[in-house]
Image 1 (cartoon, helix red, strand yellow):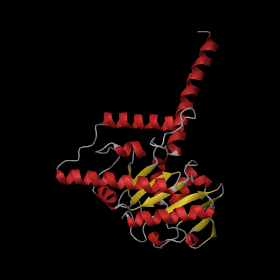
Image 2: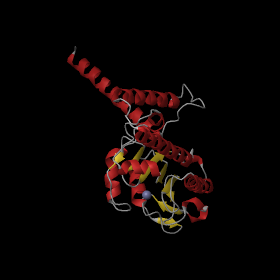
Image 3: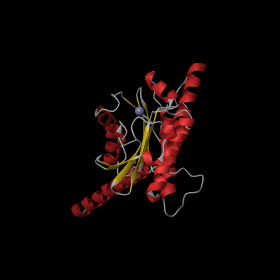
Image 4: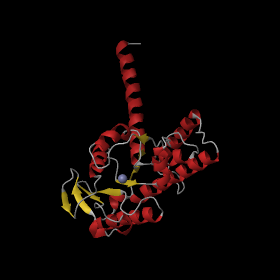
Length: 262
Ligand SMILES: [Zn+2]
């Protein structure tokens, strides 16, 4: 887990993420940006306009949670987006923003992966919606993404790139690969003739199954097996929040009945 990594290990993990994403064609040389919480008070993020495939740990920028630089050079031009996400989602430990070419190309064509043509992405990431275009680096980006941050751990910014919220850089990179892999399948289906999405009922069924698997994985009574889907902390906390709401509603009904004597 990222929270247990030392600053040095976290810096290396961010550099590794950049190298892997670049080598696998998920970013261009200076594309993308990545960040991670460092303890309770700080963030580490990638510097602006640098080759993300050749990052060095000492090049990373250290900031406070409100964006004040305390070490390193100029932070990523998308820092506003990162700060907004960490502010709105206390459960998020890392952010991986990449430019996976097929996935971005589909957004240009108005195709969304939210209702995908294959099921795997739903298990790994849940829904991955498209967010309408906004000018990169501006305050328009946090404004555009805010509405979907409560319900999603990954999304596509139209004509721009992917964003994955996670608890480790490695997980964020893996999920970015899943997004691009799903986009390639979707593109192949379109070229071959038809990219019919999964039926809505099937999507709902798969999301329910995925959520159940996540809840089993976080249950202390049933430790996660090595091949069990590891939940994003956001999904888990939202699920717990939902359970809490149900419990609160039932408790209120019971108390109301007791008070009315029925
Ligand atoms: Zn970008």
